[in-house]
Length: 476
Image (cartoon, rainbow, N blue to C red):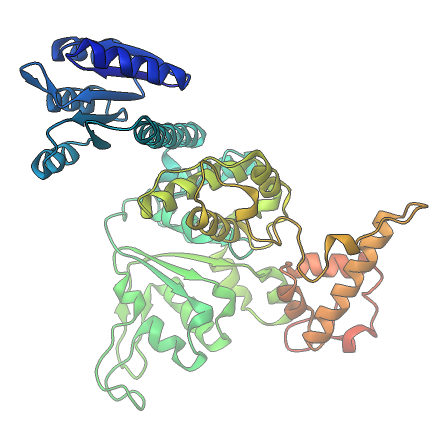
């Protein structure tokens, strides 16, 4: 049921519309002039206003303007016997939902009212989502879009606020997709360097032979194709922050130069003969276990300690399920605004699937799922069937009818252990026995991979060619 105001100077039309709208289950208030409509706009909220374009000697456009000023989300439909293109254009410019011409059919008006009220309902839902989202956002640390009410995220917010004002080097750890760059941006935005450049670098995306040139620049003629001097990304970040994303991917030669840049705050371009002073705060991130990499010789120990001055550990989404709803609603509002459409609420079933899913791709996977759902949605809510099949537990290759529970029951844990054991073996085979690569294929950390192998009795020396990771080195 909606509250509707009817504005018309003709008593018969007011009574007719009141009867018609009450049959639809709505609460109806009628007034005969514009001053009364203004008074109603100031004293009570309405979902919809139906106003004649000519109310006595006054204009229904005044009613429209009054409500758009007093109650911006109230929809207004104008009724006129003098339909002209000029009237329609002016009304729409002033914010009218639509207009209908006399004489009109009851069905025509009923459909128009229903559509206007649906828009009003969706606007209310959108506002509700924004209010609920704002209530969950704890405070100043959210300047870069970080969201979360879980205890783990609250600790991160507090840590970000503490370290942001300084220039201390920060190392952000966490699985792919957890939002490490958002943490880095929050640290940058909360400090004195906020107005200076924030330069993100994906260390894993730079070809090995070009790493030093990208980071530190080069001089003309330093190598084939170096036709001009290039300053490099460290100089581009001068006065600001340089974010070394996935720093664990850097090759050892580049690690040596990076260590010198951190220690001495100076860099030398490739092919250059003189150093340049660097004034850039360094924030690094990785999804690798750098302490383990140091043991295996894949990462310099001295560089690790230089980067690991302040450590921020961002937990995976599956370990902070309290944040799933807030994040989902944030992405709903964001992608709805980008598409210029109302933000729809999640159905209870859709929310249950989001809460129950394991999110191996973390926040990035949730973001992609919500963007897809918002794009496909065409009803009054985001239904469960708009989510990807794998999130709903639907495997197209295994029909639900093929899943049969034995009459005598089953040992579910043993069954799941067996399935996990098979996937671990498959990943190891596909990775050529390199455990770190197998862990990546399964969306696991290297530490989690080793734990699972040990738990399921797969950690024996003969397994997968005896390789434990990296370049085929042996070990625990």
